[in-house]
Length: 295
Length: 230
Ligand SMILES: Nc1ncnc2c1ncn2[C@@H]1O[C@H](COP(=O)(O)OP(=O)(O)O)[C@@H](O)[C@H]1O
Ligand SMILES: [Mg+2]
Image (tube, rainbow over all chains, first blue to last red; front, side, top):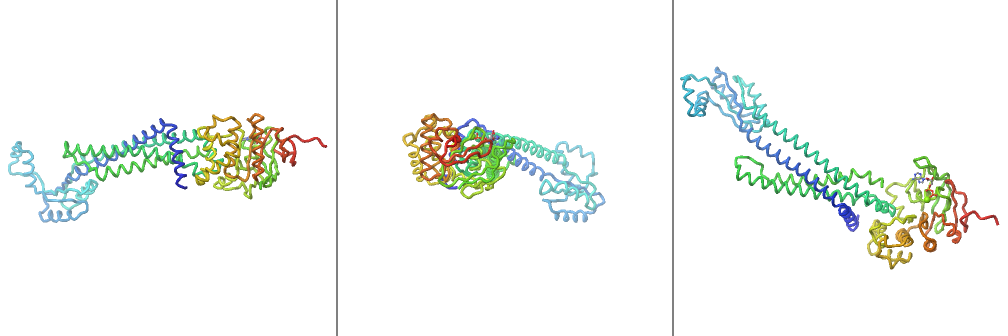
């Protein structure tokens, strides 16, 4: 199509939007809100993931040796474990070290341990940290199979609770996002349908005087794209700017919280939201195609 | 130019609007399509610009098999056919000039050429001085002349008019008739479906009379009703 034909389609699309400003505003608002919820969910889930990663990788897996294991066997095991994939670090903790550590942790109440006298009930162990949370449980299993190891323990409850939390956030956020996106789709589709009904006469005259179907369609496609784009720009802007603000205030008041830096992620999510908005507009148009054919 | 061969049309509701119609119209002819309401006149016209497809038979316009034409070619057929209806079908929010130019804007013609042609047809229908008015400010006769100008602005080979004077008073109807004959004189083939016996009788053109979806009479320089044998 020629440039002035595009201009023609754009002015027709604009007329549609202006003829029904309430519906246009409703479309933009629902699109913006639904995409914003989606954006917030994405940011939240990225952060929960990051926090979980940090905590998780700090959790050490302990593999305890039987008392009959020789020091040579233990150091051989250490060398082997260090060679495994998914292992960040591994060190040997002798029973003496373990006891003094325990005494240190008890601090003032360390006297309780004095009753043990010279007996040390603890065992030598390997303390292993994983490079990623997903490596923790296979690592524990593998350590269990090591010769001389009688017991493996790690704080699996913390880990599984975190995973549950992440899954919960994911399900709720995604469900809410999808529901709202469907709502936005419905509203955009409705705006386009009403535009088609309002312009029935114009459409039938266009066809009568020999307009191609693409010329009949484009004003409505543009209408959908404009609605989706404006809505998504609002959502993208708010989530980008808003996350930046949250991040910098968190950095000030909660410096220990390992939030994801906004520079790549908030920008990427804003981009995703804009793309989604445009797709919403296009799908909103596509759903009304049959109505358009029946004019 | 236009030919219908053994054309029948049965609507989805079972009404047989046309039954075995045979018709030939040559380039430059003027044809009145007459007959009682429900005879099938509008249906016949609708087949010519592919608003409907024939149930059987062949409809040809300017060498194209209109009934079997591919969907994407329909717009190009319609650019060669001008159509005027009883109810004008103008865009109420647009001026006379915009209404007429609308037909050319959708065909991607250069704006300068559009302006030139709109000026021409405005003159043809005698509305040059009303070019800035919107339809609600015009009389029925003027509105129908705008519709006629819009139909003619693309320089169609054929002009189809479905009861164009149906809503007009006798004076406006006569003016309309005068312009239609002028358009025909300038070379455009015209087919006009009508009930207006007086107009038909005065024009002395070819008359095709229909009844019950069939052609009953097809005479040159004829009148609305069958003339008594002289
Ligand atoms: N779209 C349609 N659907 C069903 N029946 C129709 C339709 N259009 C016309 N008809 C029927 O076809 C017959 C011919 O109608 P029409 O071509 O409009 O006749 P005319 O224009 O001569 O009055 C009538 O019986 C009419 O009721
Ligand atoms: Mg009719």
